Image (cartoon, rainbow, N blue to C red; front, top):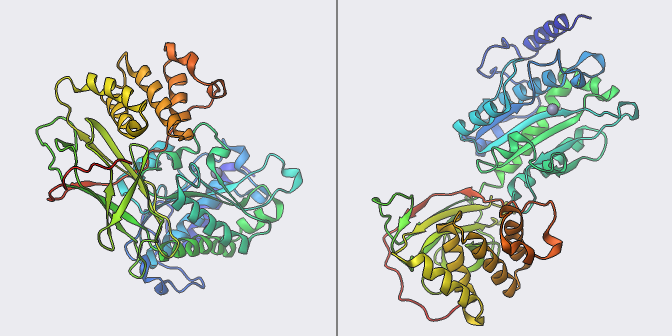
Length: 460
Ligand SMILES: [Zn+2]
């Protein structure tokens, strides 16, 4: 059959299936499946961005055609729309990256998501195998990065995989999208990685003879949308932990940089919210680093945790990174807050000198590393940057923090091709592997009027 005719029939079928015109951008109001949408009050006002994969290219894209004439982009759209109706019916605020069989560039999709500011990014796809003759069929769910840096996305991916397994043959898999695109992962998940948790569902193979028949069946696609719905509902039932950071020092609004302060011993408080009324922060789950160096926290109230660090902080950028879990087992994203301590005249040079000598003394390593990292942040393109990086790598090695040490050795070797320090980098790190770092989701840092405690004499 002629493809455009086929597509028209398919689009008409869609109109019949969900009862609205395909150019209508509002979700159709009716869902007649078995799920009682009023039983999920905790979904109210959750913002969900749904991205039906591909679109508008089925005539060119022969790979994404399955037996019986289905196209992946058509099936993706149908599932996305049914899911949209369900979530909308349960009180969520929903946006779709496309509501019709049109081509929407990937960057447009992620820009739309950025503007919408979702709590969750869901990309809906179906898989195709170049080994069609082998009857390949299983569900898969992808997330960006690793389970360590994206614990919340990984959690949702597992929940969806479990739901997929209930409706499909074959054990499902959860894996990083870096397993497919090792340099970058998928563009939609990569570009939304700091925005919110996100996953990409592959609801079985459109290239599989029997499964293609399911995917052509409206009732089955309702079941698939229900699988997404159940995973999302369970995900939100556990709460979404959030956080903010409070700092005692007022910001210098006249300074050119954001979050610029003068105080050298600011009180830093993490305000952690479990995201669920009946849950609190799980004891021992809070992990915090200040400039990559682990720091401890003292609980001041059920939500407030004071960051404990020794000495005064040097000039430059300082980044707190932290994550935790609530008592329902829901992890937070990895969060990040950065502030800037305004340098004094000549401080940069003295930080380099002092930092170098301090890392050679047993008791001064942490302070020395802070100084050198502060100095690097003040001059990351300076002719001295490679030297500072070298000393930071050494400093971490002397503290026994091999991963951090390797990270800086890697940066030195790969990012400073003209440095004389490259030949000192251990051979095992001279590979093609880029030392790329996940920074974490930015959380606001606000001034809290609090007098800093007197300087401490103990050091970590
Ligand atoms: Zn796809």
